[in-house]
Length: 279
Image 1 (cartoon, rainbow, N blue to C red):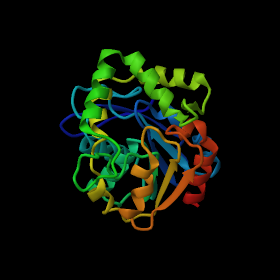
Image 2: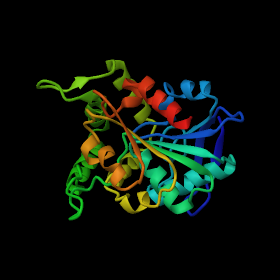
Image 3: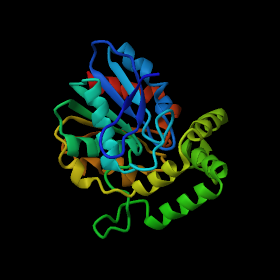
Image 4: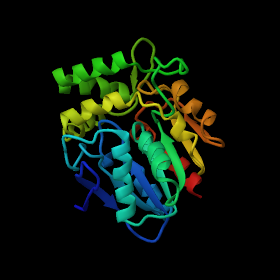
């Protein structure tokens, strides 16, 4: 199980997987409350396209270390930079899912494009979900909602995760949301979430309010946005649809009837979009 020790004021161990090989590196950054396992149905297509695929568990999640500190986007970006440096990745494409899109934006803003030549945002929380900001009325999240979610998670983690992950994989239906994956997928995702440090899960909910608009305006690499039109966690109109306003030339691909969890519900469509973008 390969790991590296991060640098900085809050060092920890990061678990990662690496298919190695001479192909163009694609670095996969998972969402909440998942781990690098969430990419398992997309990775084979990237390998078949000749890519070197690197995926890792964010600090506090999966098999990575669970420190008490460092749950903020500057630290997450620094952790990603340590991974890029340790593996000496160049000409790489960063692919961030959900809150992982924040790592992509903040990494490129803080550490530049010396190693990166492409960026992909899948079901991502960018550009800014905070609807309480006066200049961001199109946001879809609030500090009160975040605090309520944190309280619910801490009070009864299993009940909270069951409801959240059911919505994660569902789209609006006639009266009731329609689950777009087998029920077993929800159960598996709950088991993966249990690997994470509870306080890391709680701290990251607050981070979904982060304003990435200034970060995105510094992007100077080809950019792809993939988003389901039925996303009930990060609604497309509040996120993916707005990305071209902040990233010049960003290409947006909408997955019809796609929930938030498109990596499991529509892996072939995600993989095809990624391979075409990489070409």
